[in-house]
Amino acid sequence: MKITDAKVFVGGPGKNYVTLKIMTDQGVYGLGDATLNNRETLPAAYLQDYLIPNLIGMDPRNSEDIWQFFYRGAYFRRGPIAMAAFGAIDMALWDIKGKLANMPLYQLFGGKSRDGAMVYAHATGADLEDLMDSIAHYVALGYKAVRVQCGIPGMPTASYAVPEIRGEGKHYISDFTGIRPKVEVWDSARYMRYMPDALMNIREKFGPDLHILHDVHHRLTPREAAQFAKAVEPANLFWLEDPTPAEDQSALELLRQHSSVPIAIGEVFNSIYDCNRLIEKELIDYIRVAVTYAGGITPVKRIVDLAGLHNIRTGFHGAPSHSPLCMAAQAHLNAWAPNFGIQEYLVLGTPACDALFPSRHRMENGMVYVSDAPGLGVEFDESEAAQYSYTPGSHPIVRLEDGTMWNY
Ligand code: GCO
Ligand code: MG
Image 1: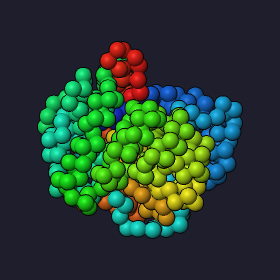
Image 2: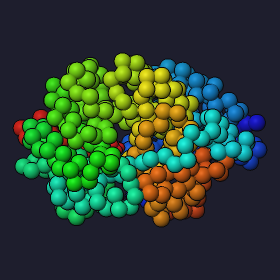
Image 3: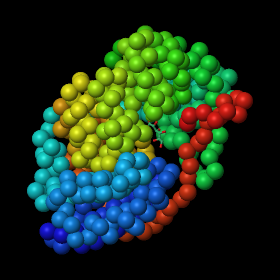
Image 4: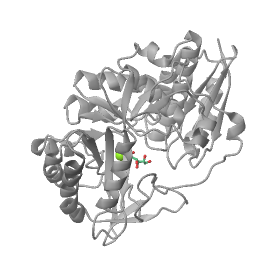
């Protein structure tokens, strides 16, 4: 069996999804996602210029060797651009494998460990009251877990994932449009004074059963993070995410000495070597890698198994930037993983997205149920894709009030 051709599509409804389609001489094809948020043309070019010419003629069934060929063969290893491109190839090869076996991917991993996998929604508000409305909206929809972010009094601009205007919190998605980044102005002191009580108010209002998550988005120094983690303990969070920038892993040692709040990290990681120390030293409770950015199903399955040895559970990244193909790969892993924890909000469900990527995966009452279709279980409608093209975008940047660059 041979790979005969592969194509890359860039575009989608409101997002520049990078979709890879690998064709074979037996008519079976596979689909994969290489969407690297706001840098989408880069994995696409890597695929087109270097990887696809090598893929043609390979036996698609040898997904492990193909992964090693590209990873080891690049010489310059790792990095999000390369790993997203390898991730798309790996996903597409698993898709082909599943179709050849006539089985959904979770069966190839070891079958189902659960029927539905719990997901969390993103609630947000311009202020705390606005956030409370947004949380109530998701609770009414049946979600058991909600990530909560809100505007901070006195903060010079709206912060990460927070709308400027009240009432937008139900469907708010950060605005990444335009090649020149928007500027947020940040003050950690105001945040640290306000947020612990706000989280406690949310806990009191919604009761003990709701799983409450909060994302610090890399904003605090190690000492501040330790203080903050201790201060939010009474709110009994499901997790505190990215308290510090992820490169400095010693920060977590300090935090662990001061707090037992569960920590989730990993959305910016792209290999097992980014997280093995955090896992082996048990400095985190949830590993947040995404199948796309971390190089595909093959390496992520290894990360999940390593995490399992240390009682660390999964909480895969699932921001709206991931295409339904990445989310499907994660849904299959979530159905199987013995150490599944939670899955971030899914892109399933918007009509335009469903038209581009039809599937029978479904979300009900805050749980995702994976379909039994062979492979990833997601189609890609090329006639729909024809209406979309690449639109440049950029993550916002963050500065302190005196102008110093900070972490978005
Ligand atoms: C999350 C993330 C995202 C990122 C985005 C960057 O927890 O979902 O922090 O919101 O900001 O994916 O590309
Ligand atoms: Mg995050």
